[in-house]
Structure formats: C-alpha cells, structure tokens
Image (cartoon, rainbow, N blue to C red; front, top):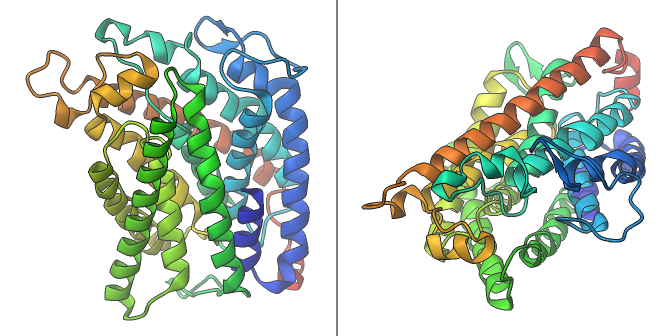
Length: 388
C-alpha cells in the first residue's frame, strides 16, 4: 500500500517537490518501524491495564501477541502516518514529518488501537450489559479517522500553499502526473484486499466465506462511491475528472474498511453512495470554503468517509455477521433492531467510540502541530516553497 500512497502523492504534487515527497515517505516508514516496535505495539496490543493502555509487548521480539501480529499491526500504523502526510504536502518543513510520526506511532494511534480492538479495553467492557461492543473491522476509525483528522488539523495550522487561494477564491494546482495518480489508486485498491480480507483471520470463527464477503462488499462500496463522485462532479463542472473518480473510489474503500464484514452487499452499495457524496461535499465545498488546502484531499477521503463507515455499522450491521466474528450476540444495526430491547444500542456505541477517538486525535494534533508552528518549524519559508 505504501507504493500506492507514494504514487498518489507524487502524481498530485508538482515536479519540483518529488524528491521531498520520496524522502519524507521513506523516513516515515523507517521511523515508524522503530517507534512501533519499541512503544506503540505494546500500548496498542499488550495486556490491558485498567482498560486504557497495554502493559506488555514493548520492544517486541515477534513471538506473537494478544491481538495482532507485529508486522500486520505495523502496516496499520504506517498507513495512519502516511495518510496525514498527504494533507501537508508541498509546504511543510521536513522536520515536522518525523516529529508527528513519533506522536502518531507512539501515542495517538496505539491508544486508539487498544480501545477499539483490545478485548480488555473500556470500550469493549462498558457496554457488555447489552452484549454489544464497538465495531471497527479493519480500522475505519483507528486508521483512517486518526490519520485524516491529524492531517486536516495540520493542514489548517500550516496554511495553504502559495497561490492556492487568490482573492478569496480557490485556484486549482494541478499535479504533474495524472497517470501516477491512477496507478497509485489501483495499487491501493489491490493492497486494500490484503488490508481488509487479511483482517478476517484475526477474529473468531474466521473462514474463507467471511473473507469472500469482505472482498465483495469492499468492491461494491468502492465502485459505487467512485461512480457517485464522478457523476455528481460532472453535474457541477460539466467535465469527467479522473482524479475525482480515483478519490471517490478510495473514499468507498475507506468507508468499507470498518463495515465490510458486518453488512450485506446491498448495504455496501448504500454506504458507497454516502461515501461518494461525503468525499465530494467535504473536498470540493466545505474545505475549500474554509480555505484549508489539502493537496491529496486526504482528509475528506479518510476522515470523512471513515466516519461514514463507522456510523454505517451502527445503522446497517447485521446481527448474525457480527455475532459470528465477535461473539457479541446483542449487536445489530438500528435498521435491524425493531422489536428488540436494545434497539439503537450499537449505534450509540459507535458514536461514543468515534467521538472519543476523534477528540483524542484532535487534541494531540493541536499539541503537535501547534508546538511546531509556535517554534517556526511547521512550514518552510517562501523562497524554499517556491523553489521546491
């Protein structure tokens, strides 16, 4: 998936910034590996202490864990870091990247992992009286909301690229290689099957049938979201934009990530429709109106569509699918809860979990990027930005 992320960022950027993009992505991958091995993995996947933090697994020797193998969980961590970097492209001081990578891979992401996926966490035990738990199948909140929101706040504090907004109006800054954008999208789509289908085998009663349902649902969600974004954009601009199609497709994959194992194929189409509209509305209207410059539109794709997917589980989650993988027999979406005593419980749990992870991420994003801005190390000077 890192190949896909790098291809996207290179394609969306201008040629003068390609070396910077490649270097900071390589640095993020290497630094995240050290941080996750030494600290992050233990916090996220270690034995729960007080339902809040992991207490073992630091400096892991790779002999297994309570929840996830080290390398698989590391891939989730570096994906979270890379999502945020796309929001900050083309004007951020190179020093800012290792600093926020450290924050993300040792504090922000690991605690979210522990709360969402560790069976001993408070988010798994506080609602047990209703036999229901927070559901985030493969990281809609833990990976995509964390990364997208971190990047969004960073982009807001960093400010737009020179020339992005002129006289209050947005100006398109076209990337230098649209073929790299399209190839990166296909790389990511292919890698996402490993991301989501592979997650199946970390749950109870995993089987090829469940993995097949995951692949089907994420494919339908991605296709529907991409087509929805392309159609809505064409009605607005009277052109067919391949970049909008690519980003809409990615938004569908993000929305499928927390939901694909728990919903039907028809529900995945509905989620795809919502994801395509959410991506386009956030990227082309709301963020532009707020003068927030996100070169890859990563915040709309990952944070916006990740929230759609997490909440969709609370609405459309099917009880037999949920019980098969998690053992939580009381969990069902709002639309399947008629006549039951705990109608709406799962939706409430999803809202609480999403809200906590959102506030946690936003707080540390403000601390990290706010401190960098105060120190004058968040953004490069004007001459450096113009030169690349």
